[in-house]
Length: 630
Ligand SMILES: [Zn+2]
Image (tube, rainbow, N blue to C red; front, top):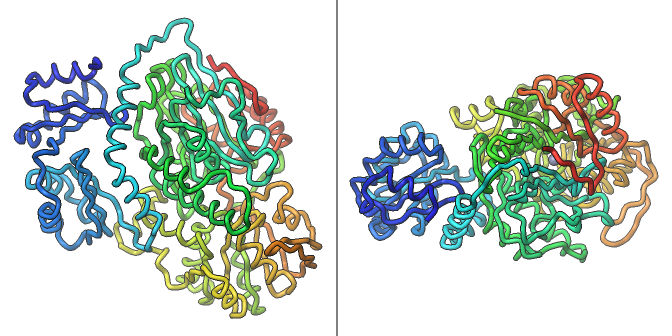
């Protein structure tokens, strides 16, 4: 038995109260057959939590739980109608019931009383989540899949805990901390950073390079990467350049956990499945298949912002809002029990948007920061958000007046939902005439996931959804298109704003819309996201107007007459000033800055500038470089 289990037994003092002690990662779960202890031990548990500094929870032994159907009735009665409960799932292995409600806040307002009443009358411990207000097959499938594997999950969570607590960690003078650049250094794409100590090996992000088929994968062939010794993967956000290679790890036999926020898990799964279905349509060779994505899901462990979690015996992580897309995180890693602290920013925006709050900048400790540099070049100043909004509004107004259409190629997640909220607001305030906003294909599925997690959104938007029950994504202006027929209807109809993937126009519906719209000067194309080198988006951005496009296997030539605009101000990335301000405001100040996720020239400019400005050691590693941090 691990020491922590022994200590807890001693603190409880009566071993007959304990049926079993289990781990769920680093949380300790005590199963009891004593109903009185189950219901009335909260003071004792609080003192144990304070002493051990671990989350500890008491649950009733599965043999004593009220049966499912009866419990459902009791729960519905206790919760009342206001919460609008849609699903109730029982996880008998872990004595927990998951309640999915359209308005969980109706329960959380008085949660302690309700949860206790449910515990008292049924024996189940409650976990509460939001049911998607826009139908989402993916959210349903993910939740079903997790419940179906509950036996496996209980074992997995426990075995991770055993591993964390069983090792005899000692931070001696031989201890070291090192990172290896496996992808996304002096470059944008295939982000992957390996963090290692004598005891642990953790991969932060595992992306693909969507614009470069030759060097698509992170360098998992590096000598220090050994998949059989990998303890954990942590994913910052669901863009494929940060998570697109993850299912391949499972295909190659990785059998460990992947940590991320719940929205990242859901959107990432959706994007993986979308990649497979797109690949099947175009007969391309796939990196992974559905079975690998399912395997990944079985091993996924959602964590919330600011929830401190031990993931190995000597690495403790906390995720912080990064302001980039829904659920996007910075990873704070406390290594060797305070020996060294690293912040890995992932992609971040140091400014608030309609959908998200500004990236967090305060950490308990931070000796080093690994920071993205997408817009780190000397001339990478973005226009202000106000200017960007005005410019975009002008483009739409003028195009609509001409009877044209505005195509906005977007990444599946992030800008699309941001622009949806913006246009909804303009129409609500009468700044724009009522024209449909076409939300193509899987963008709608991503939007449905947005509606599940208002807790991860901008404070104002969250308040509107949660407190005022007024969800802007439900506005009737949004029109969802899936089939070619529906797309043709949009194309032959009147003025509209069309949001479609992919953002860089290297495939997907944005390209076929473009082919239909680009030869008329009535129409406009607005590029709002980063355009990778070699993509159609970059060609257009650079003024290219004679383009060859592959459609249904045939290459066709187009002379572009439609107007092409680039608006940088909506970017989910910080611009040069925001990157600088981030370091300026960061608490505490790091002693070392490591730059990644940017084109080489920009990274070098930023590195030079930050070194001079802050007198902090700033480095720009190459892929395959390893840096000993301490
Ligand atoms: Zn991103």
